[in-house]
Image (cartoon, rainbow, N blue to C red):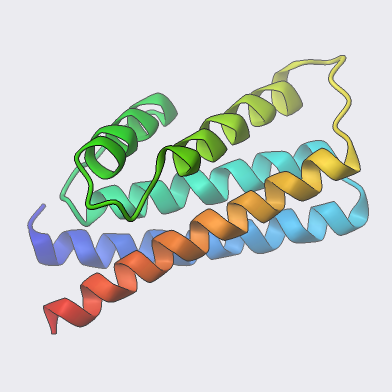
Length: 138
């Protein structure tokens, strides 16, 4: 993929991440905490994949996306994304795994609310970063 294709893909993925974020908020309101945790994580993951597309990086796994985000945007980045951001992503993945696969995991309203807030924070931060790239391109 070239740079232009990467930006198109990034914007498409951002649209999907916004949909997933809206779903997580709706599920939280309905008290479907495990499902809200799932949607919040996928909103984050899709926005990270959007971010990676701006660098023409394609990954096929959650783990690959997190590793590349950490490498490109945390360690080699310009300071926009922080270790704290990475910790929010890692925590979201842990909670999503527990919500999806641990039959005995009890998702609390407060923990889920925090997950949805973290997802909103990260999606918005990534969206702003990509918007700034779009402005610089044109």
